Image 1: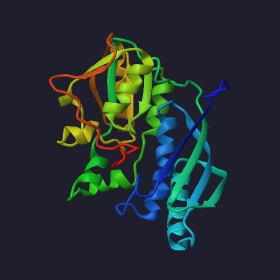
Image 2 (image 1 turned 180 degrees about the vertical axis):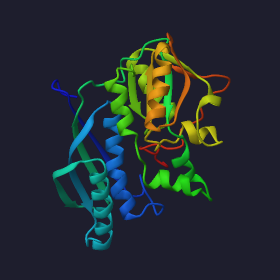
Image 3 (image 1 turned 30 degrees about the vertical axis):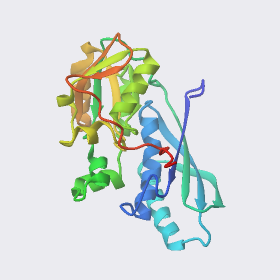
Image 4 (image 1 turned 60 degrees about the horizontal axis):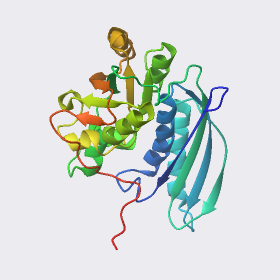
Length: 269
């Protein structure tokens, strides 16, 4: 974030690592925008413009590119983003990078959580994991995997109403992202696994990622205001625990499941 409130983010998606045959070219176009919007939502920022860089195998599959274009512009219109430039290069596999800029009038950081704050998540966690890992995923799970819809407006409202003390998006899974928030804020956390909304499989809910929901903290005295704002926005919100004076998040009554996804798989050697 820049001193004038400008917020910048970028995400890269690589074929075979971040998507497979479960996603059409149109899905990939939508998702590339959504994952970047999710980052801005988590700071209470409104997205304004985007830069696109494409690495594509030669010869270029024009049908795939047309489908990608359709999904990309569908999402850009949905989130009111202007595509202002970019670059295209040849590469052995498809790799797509979008950079998004926006503005936060009242930014929320991941480093400002305080011991005693409640911990919340939005949405239903683990659906994308089900869509990717289950041999028979539900239609809802496939939709979450293919076309995530981060709660941008609700993130803006949390910031505008000074309700969130810290916030970030759930892209790498609650296990990893909560640890990141706790480290940045210098606190620990106690989380009730039974309070985490989502699929029956705990590992899918906390250790896969791709949820693109909000993880945020708020003072205990703000509970009523948070619940009222969520109800008015039609956004499911669950209070799953609290921040503590410790140094790491604890899952009450059990241990955190091992991560189900990593951006850098270990070498087979």
